[in-house]
Length: 146
Image 1 (cartoon, rainbow, N blue to C red):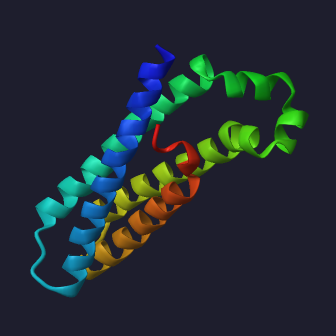
Image 2 (cartoon, rainbow, N blue to C red):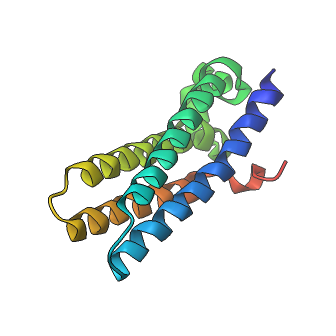
């Protein structure tokens, strides 16, 4: 069961990266040229946030119910903080990913509530770029290709 959920978590990562890059492409192209297809940009942003939310649910399931690394970390938190790999999976990875998801949701709100298109696309692109950069930083790339 753990292996299946971990493979799902790994596969969703690639969907997130693809949807994030596609969303950024649409947002930045809307900044460069007009008129922009607002519906396509909105849809791509929605897909990006939905895949992030799904990934969060899968990740929290792994974190709290299946991961032996987090069980070891919670058993002795002081020792876990001294070990880079354990600290990464117990603290750094989850916190950075949750922050990335929050940024994506802020981007969603900005897209809906901005008064002008230039503000909408510029600010949304900034938040989605920040979200995607955090994801790229927090992904444990040494385990990305199993």
